[in-house]
Image (cartoon, rainbow, N blue to C red; front, top):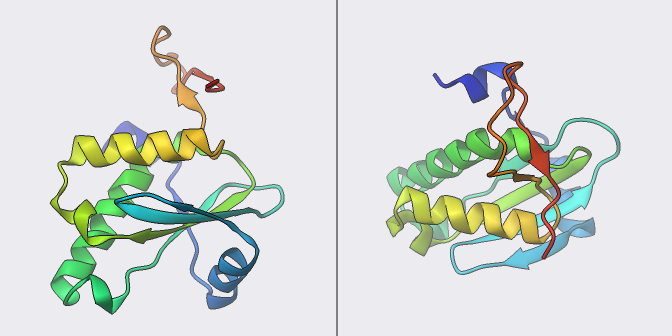
Length: 138
């Protein structure tokens, strides 16, 4: 297991009413590979939910989609903006994409919607385990 996940494991949405609230009150972002709905949730850690419907494919395909996006969340959780709930709806083209390309699409989308801080490429991670981040400015 990597250092990132052991420091602060991601918090996932579990309750139906939480998913419904985000879908009802949230802002929708559509990309070619996934849809994202997000809304403020008050103070606290960001929470992420992954919704994979039957139209994506059979159980094997749906489970693969959930695993892929759980891994994306695990790698980017430290940089997510506090106090937001995010629900992701994977699309079929995302399952055929290489991990690096999907990771770039995921981070670009979240940064452009101000749901995630961008890692500062000129400053390496600190010794204390905290990542140096700056606000992404377009």
